[in-house]
Image (cartoon, rainbow, N blue to C red):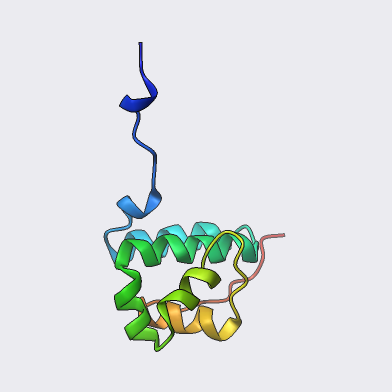
Length: 98
């Protein structure tokens, strides 16, 4: 029988180890058009990359990034753009499938 202590908690940040995986993950998240989900996903990416380094790269305080990029966060567009640029990514508009 499996014991709870034997189970490892899944953390997507453990698997975001390349720019390609990060871009694919964020692309899937963006398809939902859910700003809360995007904030949480950017938080996942930031944890995978290291919040301290991302804070340096964006010029934003680490604590502010933690608050903004969590499931209950509400980052400004400027924060999203800074984070995406620091990750070497960009937002690209695409027509909606109708």
